[in-house]
Image (cartoon, rainbow, N blue to C red; front, side, top):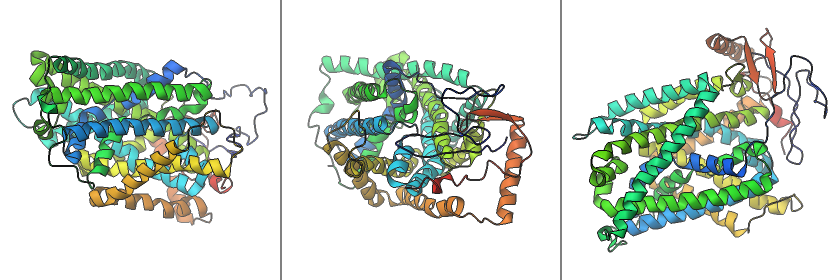
Length: 527
């Protein structure tokens, strides 16, 4: 593995990338023999865009969040209102991201937009919390749901031990990490099958539930807004649970450079996907309440299993299996997608270059997966599902709110910027205000979980000055980085690693510079 020179600039939303000699490739020029350039091809059509969004949204959330939403709203009616509002807010956020994605035609999603609008420091903090908080905690949350549902058929008459859930969850995480380290093609093939399982799990709940509704099973909807009443301090947590279930609408913006005709494809894919998902989620919750009362739902640790046992008889065993496979699909997709963000952040010099490298033969983000696995395990054994969800949601919605607020800033700062798709200003204003207000309020609602997330987010500021700004690092620091790089190289055992930052393959050679060092490019690209 070697570190190759990178020439990176931000100019009108475009990047210039250097070749192995540090020179910019000429347009239409041929690469030297034996050097194959890796480029992002535009292969994402409207149908694929819709499938990406729906496939990433539908996962563990709809099977985890109903209990959290109901617990923090206090009534059936208010919980359904929150599900609908979260769907509309997600649509507003997705439409705002559609404008950002068609104006700033670069992959990377939140990170890229924050970098373009607010500069390198907030962007670094965003990728810092993605590495330390959001991705490990999100993987742990989905994995815990996987562990619970996969064990449900074996503990029908008794409570599942928490240790058993965490142990089987650890096995599931390891399998996903190994799968994403060994083969991209196998990971993609399995993902297609798991997407089918996601839709099957949803339909198994919706169809019988709607049938019950047609038969007149509406007793749990009488006095739908009566109950202990919604507490304003509980609304941020209800918002977190609802928005977590809808999370995924922003993933198409991570691959903007690969979308065919992004000006039309991205907004249309977002509108179609969000309409389908919102209707599906509301119908799923309605289906739950045709069979389960609010009190029973709050007592259930696996609401889909409770629903199926009441309504489906012997076929109920199929539900936890399909839900577990759905969760496994979300775990697999999330780990696979994280390399996109690492790639873009490394391209800007804000992450060690080694985290953006992929295996030359297997084309898998092996170093990123190796770093992600222990962080996820720490999250898994340090908290329960709902505390982890609050923990990651604070950082996630803080930066998504900031990214959408950046859209408003760009309207005034760069009014002449080319905007093929433009949303009414009230849409990003309402979305960003709601996100930032709920994030601030959540510090009072769950001060422990969100407070830890807030503190770790703040550590990104000194980390930025330590790793990015500080040029004259001591020799011991450089020696430590070199030693760590050597251990990484020995662990990977391969002589060749492909780096998509520059897009070339180069054999390993001994060099005084190391890909574990930050590139310091961001200072040159600061706004």
